[in-house]
Length: 156
Image 1 (spheres, helix red, strand yellow):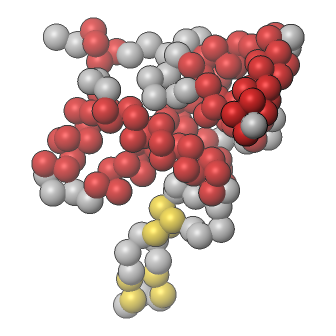
Image 2 (cartoon, helix red, strand yellow):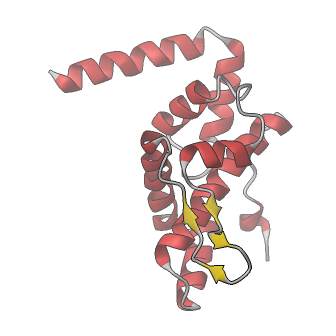
């Protein structure tokens, strides 16, 4: 029963996207980014009102709870950087799943993840950076108005 309703909702969303030219182009641009899937593209388009509500990727990263903030109290007390607990947990989990799937695929994300973890960096911190990269690239393809081009595969 749940699967049928989920499939029905997904077909309705695709119907709406196909009947609005601006949604369709945004959707296709989002799918060109390695790691972004259909569901993440749906959420990014709907939460950002087709990238008009949030024009700055940093503000969206704060909304999604993936932007780290430094904790400090005066000049003497400094703590670890943390993400804010008041965030949209649904988009954060979708971005986490996208980051996890993108490091499984051979390419720049996997190379970046393996290099940072080999240097002794925290795995979750590295995943958070990849989440931010996905958000920034999602906003960049919309702002540029073109598909994402993976320049890593052209490197010698």
